[in-house]
Image 1: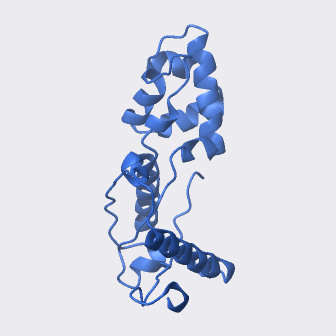
Image 2 (image 1 turned 90 degrees about the vertical axis):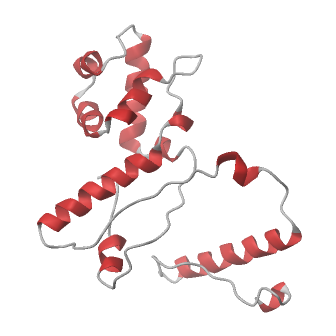
Image 3 (image 1 turned 45 degrees about the vertical axis):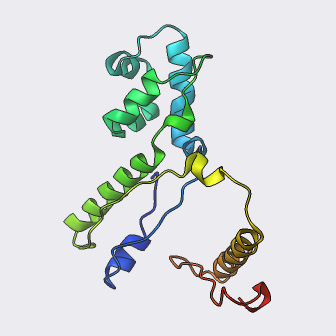
Length: 177
């Protein structure tokens, strides 16, 4: 499967139907099924196949047909029409967050039908893009992010997931955070 939704039902059972997921730009390229699909679409369209769903479905291999059929229409359009000057998919323009949210939503609905989930799932999206990279960090920013990363790493090392790294005592020197 493309995604795992282990944490949502666990958190929902304790009344915590909320959370944050940060996705790096270009993540979609590292999902093996999607990477294979993109490669075949690039090759198929470069060979002269019309950029329509029907024409593409006639050319894709069995596995890629299954993946392509699963995708929301907006993602299919992005894969067929948004091409760079070399004819390749513009991966940065694919709305990965919406694709993954739909996948999680479908899995949670499947679990709901089997009585394994009863919570709410209503994702909201925000892309930080260039605004997240628009200026040099201050000394405070650098120390704070280092402390958050170190804390997150310690949580992961201990096998503690679905938690938020937190740094306190921010008015004191970094050694006391």
